[in-house]
Length: 208
Image (cartoon, rainbow, N blue to C red; front, side, top):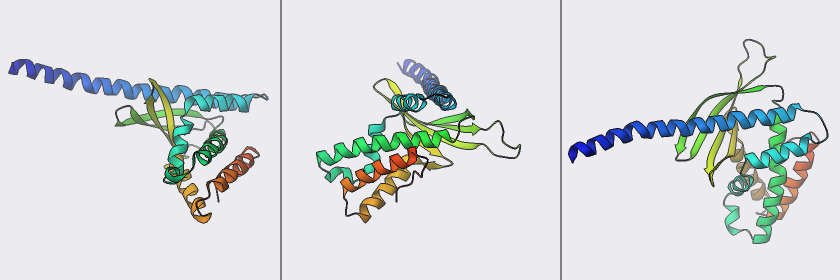
């Protein structure tokens, strides 16, 4: 019996790292394939480009989960009506932000540099954006993607650009806005809708 248990332990030690490596590779492939697809959409022309990219983003990310995180503690005391209005406004705002941020890298290519498993089914995939026209001494921009498995499929729940995680940045900005407006979620909703319009017109994505 001890010999059998020893053999089982050896098998587990051999198989588990291989399974984890395979899952990490799947996360890396997921990011590489999908972000390249998104960049191809941004590089295309035509009136449908924006709507095609929004459809792509909704399939790639879990916008509802991201929104729940960014509202932070205010979500616990908000009314159902306010939460519904915020979810809708955040979706509108998030799609505009992600499209604006990724549009900055149109013409570049994505190179996956590695990944780490934060927890079972939760990965951070590290990449760099490579600009073919960059100078030889110019360092590529580091971009990381947090990928989780939900319902048997992978989705992106956060993006880090040059070390700054967008959902954490947004949560801090929303918290500051609510602090300045007596926790008024309808005011934040109105503000996010206004920002989304500004972003789509080429303005800033920073709440104030």
